Amino acid sequence: MTAIDAAALDRMLNLLPRRYKGPGGVAGVVKDGQVIARHAWGFADMYRRLPMTAATRLPICSLSKQFTCALLLDQFEDPAALDLHVRDFIPDYRDTLPTVEQLCHNQSGLRDYWALTVLQGAEPEAEFTREMALPLIARSKTGHFPAGKLYSYNNANFRIIGELIERGTGRAFGELLAERIFAPAGMKTAELAADTRFPLDGVVGYEGNDDVGFLPAQNGVFWFGDSGIAASLDDLLAWELHIDATRNDPRSLYNRLSVPVTYADGSPASYGYGLRRDTVGGIKITGHGGGLRGFSSFRLHAAEERLSVVVMFNHDTSTFTAATALLNAALGREAASDAVRPENWDGLWLDEEQGLVVRTVQETTGVKLYYAPSAARLTVSADGVARGHAVSLKKDGELLVMQRESENLKVIARPLSPIEWADSADIAGRYWSEELDAYVEIESRAGAVHAMFQGMLGTGPVERMYALAEDIWIITTRRAMDAAPPGDWTVQVERNAAGDVAGLTIGCWLARKISYRRQARDRQASAGPSQVSDTNEPLAPS
Image (cartoon, rainbow, N blue to C red; front, side, top):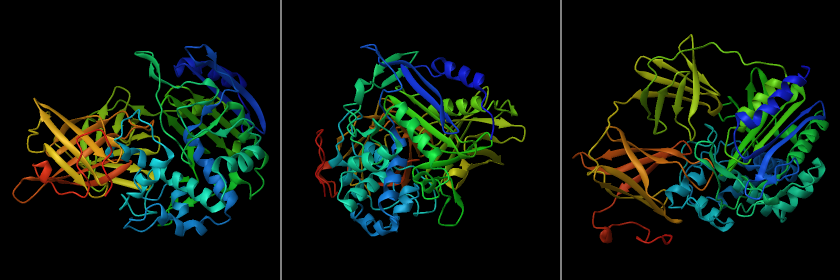
């Protein structure tokens, strides 16, 4: 094991407030079963001047997923015993049902329900109760890939697991977490605080940056299984101490969570039981990040080094880079780079299999990739390959080859010819999706094109829509109910033999290839299983 560089770690801790600018944050490090760093700075509430401390409870966001899976393994020796009950949550699903383990490993193939709230007409700041989740999930009829084939992040997987635990045990989810997970780990103040309208300890999450300022974020989502736990830095450091104390017990919950996982084809998977299996600078880690509007968190554990790092902010800044910077500083490491100046990397391609646009933008120091919800920054090496965290790009003639190892996905994308403007008159109109039982309406006016989604959650705000290539558009969603919005929705226009627009295929990385059929221009005569509404009231279910 590597000795700790205490001076470098101390310097990096003191640099965090400057490098990751925002109202406040906490960070801590555990090494060899001892807390060697506890650091808190800034304010939990800037208006009331409430200091951030190691005891302040913050939403830990998607870090909750590992605790959901830990509780599942604690309560059910073999999660496969619950497989038959998955059908209860997606009764109309026509593809092969995912298993409970595939839910835990984000291999279900189900589309993410937070992305789907956009297509169902949600307003970003609206309330989303526990009772609204299951009817939304139940509308799923197909997946965007066969269960077990690929990885795709999906919060609904863990929402279903949380519900399965409650139904299978007859106990309240929050009570079980407190009794079976938090108490044994010494997480004295952690609790399920599912309603984000009422954060604990007076903490406030903030949106913004130093350029535009910081404003309190509005959250209205009830989380359950996929998120919802609130914990202090001291609570999470206690979890890391518990992991270290039980490291030699093969039956310990964290060892069970960390077991190797594979895809259906037998290839190794880098995500399982709510934990990422990753490598940072040659060091194997397990961990997870999370984001809620106004909050960000990341924790990692390097078992071979007996080293853990926890970082939480009450603003949306990269806690992953902060945590890995602390990891490298603690071990006295500096990241090496063979990066070269990029050339000819501006481009636009289409991943036809996933139905998604791939965009690359050349920058001075690398390449910015638009494909998943958040843009990724890659550096180009001397071999001509652009590499980033768990993703690489290389050119093969006119084709772009993208390897996404953590998703078991290889993309061969064909080039598109970019256009600045397209006549949008023929795509304007109303479209209906049988998959979602929901509508999208496209409006073209004076050169501006907008899309408006309408479904079980009402009528959402109009979204901007831009032409990228012939019959290829994007709809930009930069705000959604969840902290990580879908980003760009790829819109592919489908035409009939006469060249008329017959429908659309809309998708983003979180929810791919959703078909919409064009409705008759006379909306009162349009055929569709849902009641048409021009109000902000939810559409009547079929």
